[in-house]
Image 1: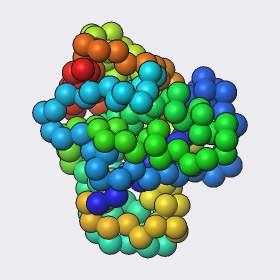
Image 2 (image 1 turned 90 degrees about the vertical axis):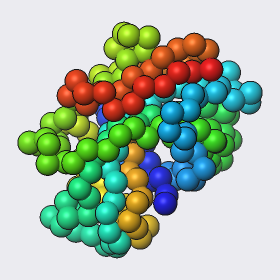
Image 3 (image 1 turned 120 degrees about the vertical axis):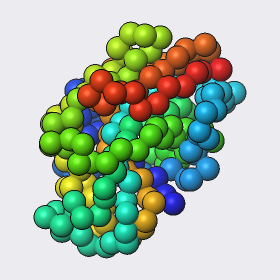
Length: 203
């Protein structure tokens, strides 16, 4: 299993981090060891003083595919979910300043929260899904897949040009604006259309 992540897929998030708007999807990979085990708290790693949450809609790939055309991409997944792409922002900034890869900031142990999965057929239109992250009971991030620069099927088609997709691979589709720092004892909850998909404590 690999975790394929998309960066800079929401214009407002690009603006808040003062990044350049890309002309094609920004892709990076997290190792499977980055997945936070179910029911486990997230522990802030000692190498960072600025761990940021980034809530994202997830897609689980159900079969092998490569060079998938956009019109057939929907045949490669049946389930969607919600998760967090934890980012060591201070580490990432240092790496970016030197033109180096982001893996240490994005792929560390526990950096990928994966909530429950649900059939995509529950929703009338996956390109108009509302989702949110609550921090200590208050909305920290609020997004809508309709605001994605590249929609789910476009992302699957694009990614499969470079990486063979395999059953069980997970696509992180990008985060909306509102990312921020976590602190010890924070409580994070992720929701799609008001339904809770995950809840974790920060230690």
